Each structure stands twice: as structure tokens, then as C-alpha cells.
Image 1 (cartoon, rainbow, N blue to C red):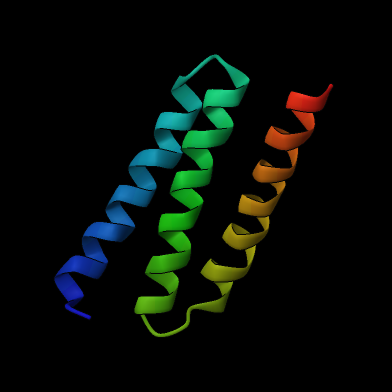
Image 2 (image 1 turned 90 degrees about the vertical axis):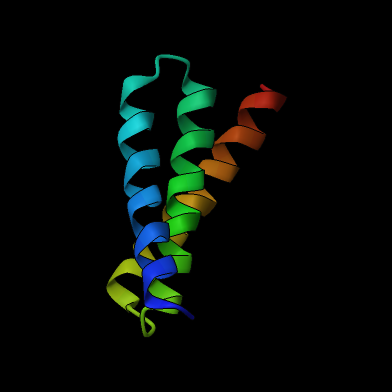
Length: 74
């Protein structure tokens, strides 16, 4: 993949993560943070399998999904 596009994916991931700290509604925080984590996973994959980036962000993404689904049931 084009290194420039990969860089933009990384920057957009950072923007989503920072944006999630600005929001007040917990479900919106989780969704925006999850988008950032997905972008970081994509960034890690396209940048040469950066496992220290892929693993924690993948786990956080699954945690966000879990809490979003659990929150709707409760």
C-alpha cells in the first residue's frame, strides 16, 4: 500500500482516539474510540505487521464491542 495513505490512516486513528476523550456520552465515546482502534489495527497491518500496535488496539476494539452490546441488554 502507498506509504502516504498508511500515514493518513495512522493520523486519522489518532484523531479518533483524541476525539473520544472530548465526548461525554459513553456509547459515543466507545464507538469513536473503536473506530480509532480499527484504524490503528489497519495502520499496523499496512505498516509491516506492527504487533505492538495491532494487539492492544484489536483487544480494545473487542472490549468496546462487548460493552456496547452488553450496555444495550442492561
